[in-house]
Structure formats: C-alpha cells, structure tokens
Image (cartoon, rainbow, N blue to C red; front, top):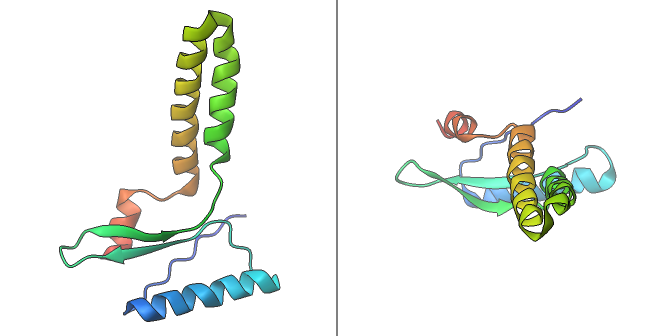
Length: 110
C-alpha cells in the first residue's frame, strides 16, 4: 500500500523542523519515507523544489540498461538509440509512479 503525505507550513524554519521530525520517525522505524521533497511557493505564485530526497530512479536505470541490451542487436547505433529510448520510457515510468505532476503541485500550492 502506498500513501503520500503532504504537509503545508507557514514559514521556512517550521518546514525544515517538520522535515527533521519526519526523518526522525523514519529512523525510529515508526514510518517509512521512500522519497521526500521541500517545495516552496514563490511570491509570483510559481513553485520551486528547494530540497529533494535521494529516491533512486530504478525504472530509469532499468529502462536504460534494457534498451541498451536490446539495441546491441543493431550495433553501436542501435545501442545508442536503445539506451536513449529506454531512458525516456523509464523516466516517464518513474514520474508516473511517483504520482506527482503539475496538477498536484498546483492543488497543493492553492
């Protein structure tokens, strides 16, 4: 089961204090954090990523490796095309799996 927790803070210091508290709970084993990010709403109503966790893009890496191996059949050119296509498809799968898109960010920032 996957769940996403979104917490909105009024100021930057409370944001990082909350992030430290959640990481402490993860260290204790009370919760499991698989990915994290601190996203800031700017004065012009845009959002920017201030801090990003170290989630590993496994589908991107797997797609690159698989595409490269399949592309070996076509020689060096096939290898390059296969690796590029695998990276693109794996990257799309990672972003889709995360469930975070522009619409989600807009909803949270509103």
